[in-house]
Length: 317
Image 1: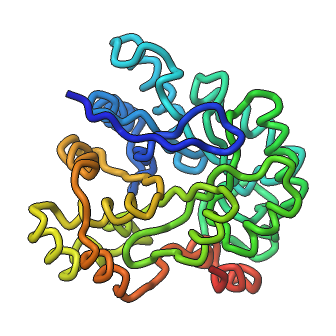
Image 2 (image 1 turned 30 degrees about the vertical axis):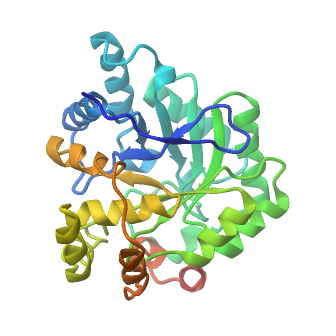
């Protein structure tokens, strides 16, 4: 039987967001059929929130999976799903935002997405096929102009909610200073070894929900590591609770009031990741996790190269 996942309400959005999303980015990239099959399995076990992006190359697979899920009767309507996608920096120009959103909708075979995010706080002046990039093709984001175009996406009904991703406290404040519609979500790296306390406090104060990507540290990827899944501290808590280390990490994120974007194409791990809602960490567990050494895993410099203003952005929290 499918697990019922709790939801949260978003600002300026009439649709609740399931608190657990299935991420569709994979490393190395999976083919369309593999991704589609994984999404269908996820729907069967209870996932209703799917996180994609132009950059992931998974939008078409998500779209085909939705069509097939409807045909199989796994869902009654598209409205039962919450779909998030993202604006790639090559399109992060005021004139290109609406066309980029429409292109994503075409890939997804949808009339609207539920959440459209600015993927990264930079602008690429050309379409790039690989990273890192040369300094001349990357520049700071025109936050005011791009955000106005994100608001236009919402006004046009292309998305129910708009938000940001990988934005620091300063950049989040900058968006808020120009926004007529404030961001509903800031999707960032967050887990027990990168807890984002300052950013979480700001976003809570401003009514912005945090979505955590890499809640398990993105193990087995080029940018992640095994600090969470191999953590002796988390393993000790897991053993005491009769849970896995991954479940302890996911439960910790959930208890911070944060939405999770987990990624596994393995059916059993998909189920395991959902088994975090009917138990709780103790106060001692929380205090222990609070003391874990902190280290940011994902940096802009690791993606685009160690350019001057990129390093400055990475230094912000």
